[in-house]
Length: 325
Image (cartoon, rainbow, N blue to C red; front, side):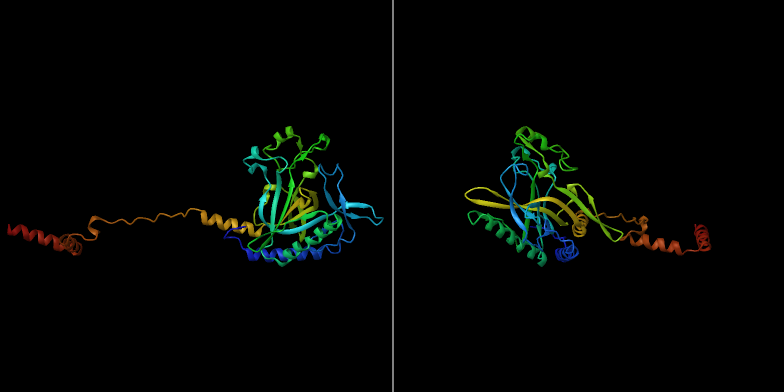
């Protein structure tokens, strides 16, 4: 993972630390079991819920919050903050769609903490979720939830498929959001039985401070850049893959730009470095032939004598020369 030589990793790390701690403190009073931070989880009333065929085109399990009467009430949405290390959100940048399978095309981001203790602690808490799933499946399934690491930086991957197998459910098809598929790259996959549904929607926002208050505005996926500090919202899903392995993934459903200070500063520094150096032309000096260096000594002496000569001396000299003739 390389954010570039111009990216201020230490400053971004401290900003991320402060953001995670501040948000957790601000929202503690408004805690809701169906809407939690990984850094402050409470799984006492959380159960593993098998999704219905209307919720998913494959067999999968999610975390859900129970109501007071013991009924499953709402899917749990988790929030996680980090620095964008990888961004793949605009299908217009995918140049080789012909060789891609519709079942694997996804909107993807990778978060890092750059050494942030709050970020690392948050990712370690995800093991609690894995343990909950392991207990649910009674140890009969191997739980695979990989937290990546690159040169000491923990990584958290978030994704959401662009398309879902229709299975004769065309009524669930919805239009792509603004800026998600501006070049109609995915039209051809409709003939292969894949559609875009509510399960495939990721909403994009940017947070702006106005009059000492934070406001959210929708934005295009092309807004996000490597180095941005963001918040990702999503759900934990588990699904079988092969050989008794149950894979666990974080399905992204919203991405919010929190702070672009350090990504913009790095981009501006790179631009200044790559810009061509402009040399301003200097005015040329003008000299006569007699002022050139290395001029003939006799010419120089004559010129200096002529310069010091008085007009009267010149006249008398001329007359004297005539009388002698």
